[in-house]
Image (cartoon, rainbow, N blue to C red; front, side, top):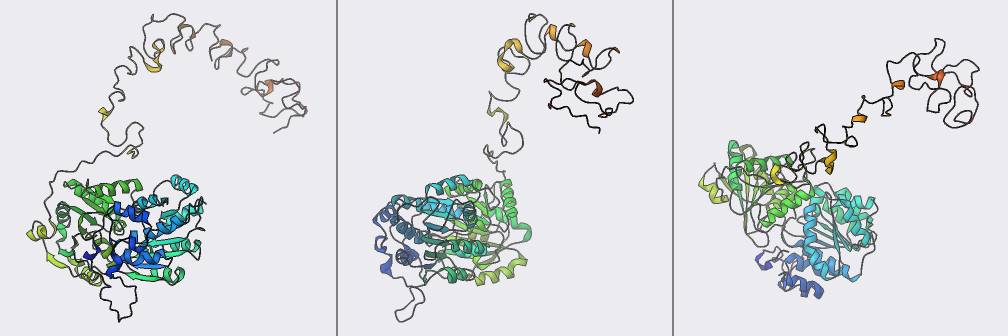
Length: 588
């Protein structure tokens, strides 16, 4: 869990509020940020926070926690990285713990987030605190099987952290019902509106009780978010600790004007810098292509976008957090809510068109008092539109015209020339099957399994086996054997003197080798297949209906008028015929 720095290091937009003015939003004073115990949280929660090294609340936490604990609807607006997760998470856990266990399928609190990664991050942050107060949390996100989520809801979940799409699916399947929800949280509400989730979010909120408490947290509180506020929130109190612009004093912004032909080389030099770097591209295809190009010049990078499976996305993000990969190339799926310590540079390979997107991307660095830089690569044709976008975002970047190898490029970004040695990726896990063959997954060398390699087994080769060949029966091996290695009574397959196919004595009863009944050239008096005496009881043996040569007047299925089946044939069972009746035959 993240250890938060002293909030005094952050600027407060509310410090300018004077007692004589009429504040639109609730002010935050220095006395409000002394400790979590002063906010009215239970002692168990305060003890867990102290154990995790979280001792002093951020401004957004100090401002919103008392009102949320009191049961009021809260609107919280704060810059990314300002601690909104604990601002809504701690009151949710404290209030939910008072009501006891949840009923099966009926969670007591709902936290809606826009992305899977943010849902998992919120759950990871709150689980240690939840265990301390006996509250069970569960994520419900897409890209993973339904089974575990449905099983957890069946056992009873107090708090469910969900993305709108998966929660709607679980409700439709009858696994989750929102009738008992006491607190509903919308995190990154503006992003959910931007991503088109507003209809689903509206439908989900309508399923919760009208009297339920609502907490809405976002970096911005405008546009479609106001629609949700007007419909579902009752007399909300608003707390804001940052303006909707990039005002973090520890963040530097740079706009690099580059030649079109040098876009990728400059990108690769910047990606090869020391420290963690997150690179934003516009499309999923652009992300994958850039990762492949970086690997070809010796820069190992991970790809993160909505087209990846959840298992791959989780693994990629974990490698980046743990430092096994220093470069993460992502779409806007990683622009909001995802917290990774130590990101010192954000690079926009494709400049965003929306000011809010720029601010959210930039917010991945300079978090919790750390310093960081934001670099935007701009081609000549993108210069004017990018400058207008940055102006709307409240950013005044340093503007430089650079080429590959310039000292200014290294000074601003720490760019270094890549090694040029291609990165060799490790083979995919067994579940990632690369083809349709059953024996090999990925690109595993043939020598990985010396005892199980196909066709290269000394004791188990096919054909020439001395000991335990196919079937582990030395007398029954399939293949070429000396003529005298078996006695007449040997029963090995395919080599039986008395029972060879087509060359047996007349008395032998092997299949298909009966001289009186051979199919083909027979004497005129021979009985063909299915042509037996009347007393024979074999199936389908009727003299008048034999398939083959018949008298000219006999037609298939056409018996003379008045001819009856009884008496003309004897079926397998006793009686006139197998149906127990003596009806005349029907002409066809």
